Amino acid sequence: MPIIHAIRILHKDIYCIAGKFTKKDKLGIHQTVEKLTIEILSLAIEGAFRSRETKKPVLELLRVKTEILKNLIRTENELKIIEDKTYIQFSEQLVEISKMTNGWIKYSQT
Image 1 (cartoon, rainbow, N blue to C red):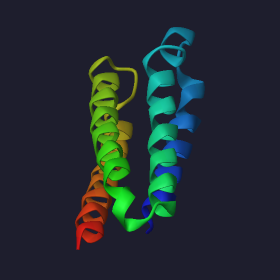
Image 2 (cartoon, rainbow, N blue to C red):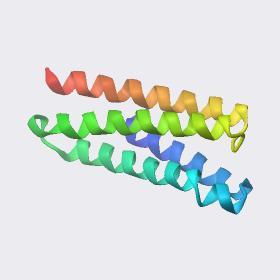
Image 3 (cartoon, rainbow, N blue to C red):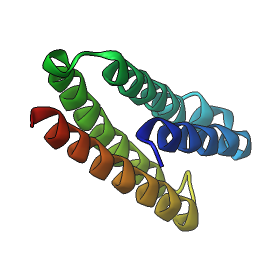
């Protein structure tokens, strides 16, 4: 599955669970999580259109923001905003996105 598609699915899943939250949670940490997901989607699309020579900084930023997103989702789970089952689902998706990003970085360097 291409990385852009994987991020789109993650964003859709994150967006769909927001209806279950209290206003405080929805407008707090979860809003940051959703915005960060859109940022990593934007970076992946930008990386796809950049030339091989200019791709690396964008992909490195994508990797960093993905790690930040992982930690924010972990915090949501620790605060009991999202259930364990949802956390595991999001974590699996983010691990796969991280692997794809790292593979893309290695590929663009050869």
